[in-house]
Length: 114
Length: 112
Image (cartoon, rainbow over all chains, first blue to last red; front, side):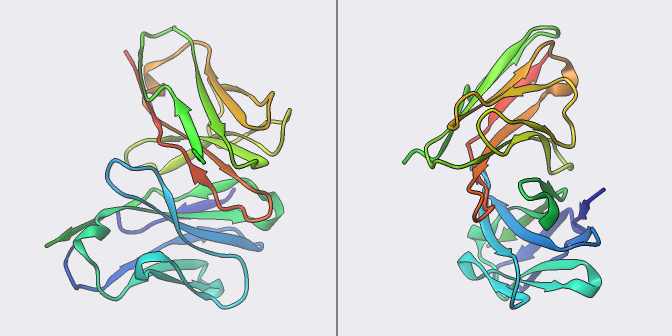
Protein backbone atom coordinates (compact mmCIF):
# COMPACT_ATOMS: atom_id res chain seq x y z
CA UNK A 1 0.00 0.00 0.00
CA UNK A 2 1.07 3.54 -0.64
CA UNK A 3 2.37 5.55 2.27
CA UNK A 4 3.88 8.98 2.83
CA UNK A 5 6.35 9.83 5.55
CA UNK A 6 7.24 13.30 6.76
CA UNK A 7 10.32 13.15 8.94
CA UNK A 8 9.98 16.39 10.81
CA UNK A 9 6.92 16.64 13.00
CA UNK A 10 7.64 20.01 14.56
CA UNK A 11 10.11 22.58 13.26
CA UNK A 12 10.94 25.88 14.93
CA UNK A 13 12.87 28.50 12.96
CA UNK A 14 13.70 32.16 13.26
CA UNK A 15 12.65 34.56 10.56
CA UNK A 16 14.99 34.62 7.55
CA UNK A 17 16.22 31.08 8.23
CA UNK A 18 16.10 28.56 5.42
CA UNK A 19 13.56 25.77 5.45
CA UNK A 20 13.62 22.21 4.20
CA UNK A 21 10.87 19.75 5.06
CA UNK A 22 11.38 16.15 4.15
CA UNK A 23 8.84 13.93 2.42
CA UNK A 24 9.32 10.34 1.28
CA UNK A 25 6.75 8.05 -0.25
CA UNK A 26 6.53 4.36 -0.92
CA UNK A 27 5.11 3.46 -4.30
CA UNK A 28 6.92 1.94 -7.22
CA UNK A 29 4.90 3.39 -10.07
CA UNK A 30 4.32 6.83 -11.50
CA UNK A 31 3.08 9.35 -8.98
CA UNK A 32 1.71 12.85 -8.73
CA UNK A 33 3.04 14.80 -5.76
CA UNK A 34 1.63 17.68 -3.76
CA UNK A 35 2.39 19.95 -0.84
CA UNK A 36 -0.54 21.51 1.00
CA UNK A 37 -0.46 24.13 3.74
CA UNK A 38 -2.92 24.76 6.55
CA UNK A 39 -2.59 28.16 8.22
CA UNK A 40 -3.96 28.45 11.77
CA UNK A 41 -7.74 28.36 11.72
CA UNK A 42 -7.92 27.92 7.96
CA UNK A 43 -8.50 25.02 5.63
CA UNK A 44 -5.90 23.34 3.47
CA UNK A 45 -4.69 25.01 0.33
CA UNK A 46 -2.32 23.87 -2.38
CA UNK A 47 1.28 25.14 -2.22
CA UNK A 48 2.64 23.32 -5.26
CA UNK A 49 2.35 20.13 -7.28
CA UNK A 50 4.42 17.91 -9.51
CA UNK A 51 2.97 15.80 -12.29
CA UNK A 52 5.80 15.50 -14.81
CA UNK A 53 8.63 17.45 -16.43
CA UNK A 54 11.10 19.62 -14.53
CA UNK A 55 11.59 17.95 -11.14
CA UNK A 56 12.09 21.33 -9.48
CA UNK A 57 8.69 22.94 -9.08
CA UNK A 58 7.89 26.38 -7.79
CA UNK A 59 4.77 27.20 -5.83
CA UNK A 60 3.15 30.12 -4.14
CA UNK A 61 4.80 32.39 -1.55
CA UNK A 62 8.35 31.51 -2.57
CA UNK A 63 8.13 27.79 -1.87
CA UNK A 64 9.69 25.18 -4.11
CA UNK A 65 10.07 21.41 -4.05
CA UNK A 66 12.34 18.95 -5.77
CA UNK A 67 11.24 15.51 -6.92
CA UNK A 68 14.07 12.98 -6.69
CA UNK A 69 12.71 9.77 -8.19
CA UNK A 70 15.65 7.58 -7.11
CA UNK A 71 15.11 8.61 -3.50
CA UNK A 72 11.29 8.59 -3.61
CA UNK A 73 11.45 12.06 -2.14
CA UNK A 74 9.69 15.38 -2.63
CA UNK A 75 11.23 17.81 -0.18
CA UNK A 76 9.83 21.29 0.34
CA UNK A 77 12.17 24.29 0.55
CA UNK A 78 12.10 28.01 1.12
CA UNK A 79 15.27 30.11 1.28
CA UNK A 80 14.02 32.60 3.86
CA UNK A 81 10.96 32.01 6.02
CA UNK A 82 8.65 34.66 7.40
CA UNK A 83 6.52 34.71 10.52
CA UNK A 84 3.47 34.37 8.26
CA UNK A 85 4.73 30.93 7.14
CA UNK A 86 3.77 29.52 10.53
CA UNK A 87 1.43 26.70 9.58
CA UNK A 88 1.09 22.96 9.19
CA UNK A 89 2.49 21.48 6.00
CA UNK A 90 1.33 18.25 4.40
CA UNK A 91 2.96 16.21 1.68
CA UNK A 92 0.60 14.07 -0.40
CA UNK A 93 0.92 11.45 -3.11
CA UNK A 94 -1.44 10.19 -5.78
CA UNK A 95 -0.57 7.23 -7.94
CA UNK A 96 -1.17 7.72 -11.64
CA UNK A 97 -3.00 4.39 -11.77
CA UNK A 98 -5.47 5.36 -9.06
CA UNK A 99 -6.19 8.98 -9.76
CA UNK A 100 -8.51 10.58 -7.29
CA UNK A 101 -7.03 8.86 -4.26
CA UNK A 102 -4.65 11.18 -2.41
CA UNK A 103 -2.56 9.83 0.47
CA UNK A 104 -1.29 12.40 2.98
CA UNK A 105 1.71 12.39 5.26
CA UNK A 106 1.37 13.04 8.97
CA UNK A 107 2.10 16.73 8.61
CA UNK A 108 4.86 19.04 9.86
CA UNK A 109 4.10 21.95 12.12
CA UNK A 110 6.30 24.92 11.34
CA UNK A 111 6.65 27.66 13.90
CA UNK A 112 8.53 30.78 12.80
CA UNK A 113 9.71 33.09 15.56
CA UNK A 114 9.76 36.81 14.73
CA UNK B 1 -18.15 31.16 -6.04
CA UNK B 2 -18.43 29.71 -2.57
CA UNK B 3 -16.04 26.86 -3.42
CA UNK B 4 -16.48 23.96 -1.01
CA UNK B 5 -18.83 24.40 1.92
CA UNK B 6 -19.53 22.09 4.82
CA UNK B 7 -22.36 21.95 7.31
CA UNK B 8 -22.40 21.91 10.23
CA UNK B 9 -19.18 23.54 11.47
CA UNK B 10 -19.37 22.00 14.94
CA UNK B 11 -21.33 19.12 16.42
CA UNK B 12 -21.38 17.19 19.65
CA UNK B 13 -22.90 13.72 19.64
CA UNK B 14 -23.48 11.10 22.27
CA UNK B 15 -22.22 7.57 21.65
CA UNK B 16 -24.67 5.69 19.48
CA UNK B 17 -26.30 8.72 17.90
CA UNK B 18 -26.31 9.21 14.16
CA UNK B 19 -25.68 12.23 12.00
CA UNK B 20 -24.98 13.34 8.45
CA UNK B 21 -22.36 15.83 7.33
CA UNK B 22 -23.09 17.72 4.14
CA UNK B 23 -20.49 18.86 1.64
CA UNK B 24 -21.39 21.03 -1.32
CA UNK B 25 -19.24 22.38 -4.15
CA UNK B 26 -20.11 24.84 -6.89
CA UNK B 27 -17.12 24.25 -9.18
CA UNK B 28 -18.70 21.41 -11.18
CA UNK B 29 -15.97 19.06 -10.00
CA UNK B 30 -16.24 15.37 -10.75
CA UNK B 31 -14.32 14.10 -7.73
CA UNK B 32 -15.26 14.57 -4.11
CA UNK B 33 -13.65 13.29 -0.93
CA UNK B 34 -14.12 12.97 2.81
CA UNK B 35 -11.11 13.03 5.13
CA UNK B 36 -10.63 13.00 8.84
CA UNK B 37 -7.78 14.90 10.49
CA UNK B 38 -6.35 13.72 13.79
CA UNK B 39 -3.29 15.12 15.60
CA UNK B 40 -0.07 13.54 14.39
CA UNK B 41 -1.83 11.46 11.74
CA UNK B 42 -2.32 13.91 8.92
CA UNK B 43 -5.44 13.54 6.82
CA UNK B 44 -6.83 10.11 6.20
CA UNK B 45 -9.21 9.39 3.37
CA UNK B 46 -12.55 7.95 4.49
CA UNK B 47 -14.50 7.65 1.23
CA UNK B 48 -14.39 9.31 -2.13
CA UNK B 49 -16.44 9.62 -5.28
CA UNK B 50 -15.32 9.94 -8.88
CA UNK B 51 -18.73 10.94 -10.16
CA UNK B 52 -22.42 11.26 -9.42
CA UNK B 53 -23.84 7.99 -8.16
CA UNK B 54 -20.44 6.42 -7.46
CA UNK B 55 -18.53 6.00 -4.20
CA UNK B 56 -15.40 4.13 -3.13
CA UNK B 57 -13.67 3.29 0.12
CA UNK B 58 -10.59 5.10 1.28
CA UNK B 59 -8.10 4.26 4.02
CA UNK B 60 -10.48 4.35 7.02
CA UNK B 61 -14.04 3.66 5.83
CA UNK B 62 -15.34 1.62 8.77
CA UNK B 63 -18.20 3.22 10.66
CA UNK B 64 -19.01 5.67 7.86
CA UNK B 65 -21.27 5.66 4.84
CA UNK B 66 -21.48 8.12 1.96
CA UNK B 67 -23.79 9.05 -0.84
CA UNK B 68 -23.44 11.18 -3.95
CA UNK B 69 -26.91 11.53 -5.40
CA UNK B 70 -26.12 14.92 -6.96
CA UNK B 71 -22.85 15.95 -8.54
CA UNK B 72 -22.47 18.96 -6.28
CA UNK B 73 -23.18 17.19 -2.98
CA UNK B 74 -21.35 14.50 -1.03
CA UNK B 75 -22.85 13.30 2.23
CA UNK B 76 -21.00 11.54 5.03
CA UNK B 77 -23.07 9.54 7.50
CA UNK B 78 -22.27 8.12 10.89
CA UNK B 79 -24.90 5.52 11.79
CA UNK B 80 -23.79 4.90 15.37
CA UNK B 81 -21.19 7.38 16.57
CA UNK B 82 -18.27 6.23 18.71
CA UNK B 83 -15.73 8.30 20.69
CA UNK B 84 -13.04 7.15 18.23
CA UNK B 85 -14.83 9.20 15.57
CA UNK B 86 -14.08 12.43 17.42
CA UNK B 87 -12.12 14.33 14.79
CA UNK B 88 -12.11 17.19 12.34
CA UNK B 89 -13.72 16.20 9.05
CA UNK B 90 -12.75 17.83 5.79
CA UNK B 91 -14.47 17.58 2.47
CA UNK B 92 -12.63 18.27 -0.77
CA UNK B 93 -13.35 18.30 -4.47
CA UNK B 94 -11.27 18.24 -7.62
CA UNK B 95 -11.63 18.29 -11.37
CA UNK B 96 -10.54 15.12 -13.14
CA UNK B 97 -8.24 17.17 -15.35
CA UNK B 98 -6.08 18.66 -12.61
CA UNK B 99 -6.49 16.55 -9.46
CA UNK B 100 -5.84 19.66 -7.36
CA UNK B 101 -8.12 19.28 -4.39
CA UNK B 102 -10.05 22.21 -2.96
CA UNK B 103 -10.91 21.85 0.68
CA UNK B 104 -13.84 22.96 2.76
CA UNK B 105 -13.48 24.68 6.15
CA UNK B 106 -13.98 21.49 8.16
CA UNK B 107 -16.45 20.13 10.70
CA UNK B 108 -15.31 19.57 14.26
CA UNK B 109 -17.14 16.56 15.67
CA UNK B 110 -16.97 15.45 19.28
CA UNK B 111 -18.48 12.16 20.38
CA UNK B 112 -18.92 11.75 24.14
